[in-house]
Amino acid sequence: MPSSSKALPQDLVDQVLVQGVRSRTELLREHGRRVLAGVRSIIFGLQFFSEGIDLPGSLCEHVVINKLPFTPPSSPVEEGLAEWLDSQGRDPFNELSVPWVAMKLAQWAGRGVRTETDWAVITVCDIRLTTKRYGNAILVGLPPFPVVYTVSNRLKLFERAWLTTYPFFRKYRFQTMT
Image 1 (cartoon, rainbow, N blue to C red):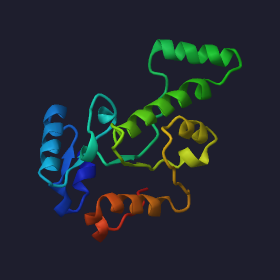
Image 2 (cartoon, helix red, strand yellow; image 1 turned 30 degrees about the vertical axis):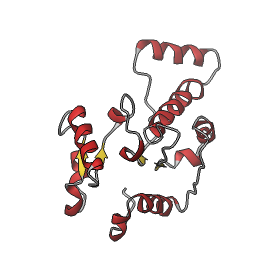
Image 3 (tube, rainbow, N blue to C red; image 1 turned 90 degrees about the vertical axis):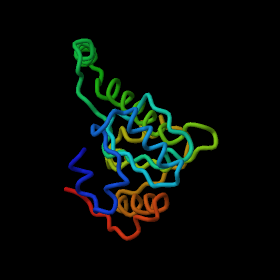
Image 4 (spheres, one colour; image 1 turned 45 degrees about the vertical axis):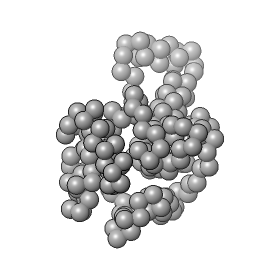
């Protein structure tokens, strides 16, 4: 996370609050202070910020999700259930992993929409959402908001959504990272 923030243009560094540099409570307090004062504030965070926080209204207007949160079974119970499903001729990936990812993605999207009057741009950069069969099952689990996507123009869509929310970024060019 710190290396990502260091890659930013120098004039943006002071606007970014990075997970791990200070406690979550301090970071969120500083973010709220900045937003209420009309100062731009950007939080760089990981799954740590996907649940247990409330950022209504202008405190969270754009959520960027780099990758779908697929994880291998991490507990003996999860491993046992996956093995049992497999022994029954069932698909542990589609029965366990896909629903779990859909739930996590809905939680993450919920960071931007906390009340009936909130709005937010939710950008998912992981092309598996549109290129894999399970992507549609995950999209169906999201709240009923408009979905705009294309595989070939995803960077342009991201840039347009980002620039709509943060017009001061217009002077920067977005590039794909490999």
